[in-house]
Image 1 (cartoon, rainbow, N blue to C red):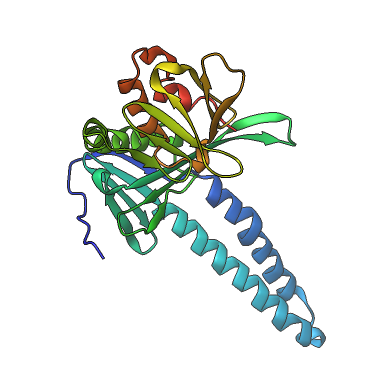
Image 2 (image 1 turned 90 degrees about the vertical axis):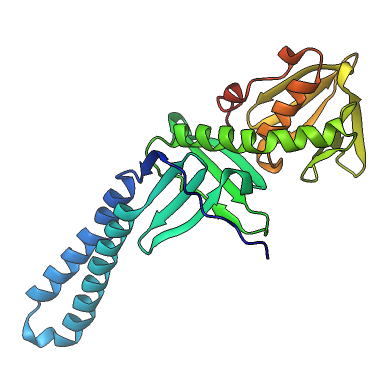
Length: 262
């Protein structure tokens, strides 16, 4: 396996966990645990057979709740100039440089209360290193939208030059099993196998809506593409496409992509 270097650049930002996890631990474990302990303490001596299980269950819930609170207090993501670090109860869990993020999968989901009232957006980012090991960012970080923007921007910038050089030499860059890009065309996998290609000069518009990337070819009504979550390095794809087409305005900016969530 390839040895990876730990990022050692200056700290640019620190994103701790939100208080939501700690509040949930109090409500779901600490409070019920205290209630069970109090209930067991009030049982008469004749109910000793019921006292012990209730006391044990209450103490277990109480200890688990306190552990969850401490764990959430230790959870944070440290952004450095050359990479990121994931910290938890056991210290630094993993660290990855931007240049070592071989793949980035991105998904943004709009949260709703009772399926009707919007209550924010959840961002899911999975990073894969050159050894194929996956590293997930927690979704409950403070400023998660800013963190997602930092990670996608820095990872795209780190991989862009090498990917562009491959295309300029006449090669192709693959984005998972979904998309293939070279200096003449973009190809997308069809539903029942094979690829559909579109010359770069024939692209009419590239849109992102509802978590889906769609590429429309001139003279046709059918768009092709795929789900953002299924396309690794989708922001790198858009940056390369913007650099290659003669009309870069047809490609959405990477910041605009993040506003169109599923």
